[in-house]
Length: 99
Image 1 (cartoon, rainbow, N blue to C red):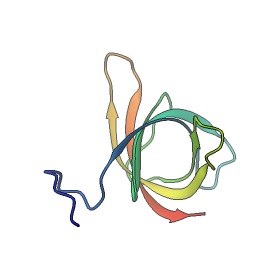
Image 2 (tube, rainbow, N blue to C red):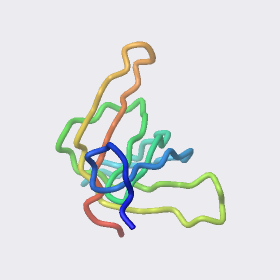
Image 3 (cartoon, rainbow, N blue to C red):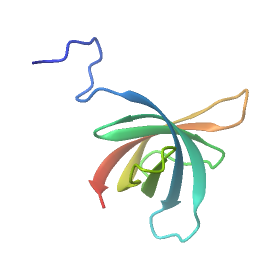
Image 4 (cartoon, rainbow, N blue to C red):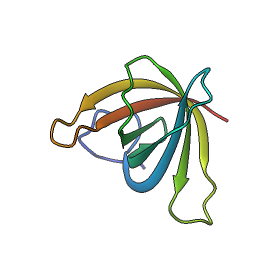
């Protein structure tokens, strides 16, 4: 049965309440963010750390529910928007490889 929704995305997005841990590829520095939504091929999160489109990241999605296993993936930054009110960055990444 096909899901009927107006989005033009390949996969449905779910709102999530989770913690994101990420590092830039080739770096041992780790940063944090707050997950906002998740789909089969991407994650959107908010962070204080500035990122650039095209950057490669290692991402770990830590669910709030401790019985759910964290999701680890290699990801590519596809969108970054700075929220002028908070000074934080809204980041969209595509999941390239689940590890």
